[in-house]
Image (cartoon, rainbow, N blue to C red; front, side):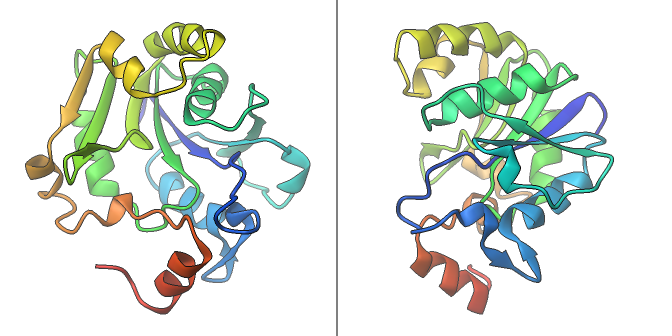
Length: 199
């Protein structure tokens, strides 16, 4: 998928997890490496947005770059803004580091649905899923203003930019069980997912 950069957000505080979940073990790698591996199969260039780049010294891949979060706080808007700012492409696909069941076909469908829009956001169980979405550089200035005003609810962005909500019926054509949106926020969710693939 040319013209898009994959962006993995790994700068959260992992309070509910109890340790840095990006570095938790997952199938012989770290969890963030597992997510990056999925994106590397789709995008020629990928970014991992983190608070402390020195904690991620293990990459030696030409299509993956670790970049520093441009905000000191931990919130999704800051991570998306940082990804858009560091990316060389006009669009980015953003996901979180704890989403190891992301479905490439869904990502491709989001990209295909995005013509003429500034953001493409899937909806699952009646809730927008902003950390599995496509964003254009046109969002960057709006996000910067929202952060400066401390308006950190991501829904405000979608009220301003041209947003295509990719509805649940559409999502199911590529991901019937919504596995792409499974995020492992707690240690219990993580251990359960390691034992058995969620459904």
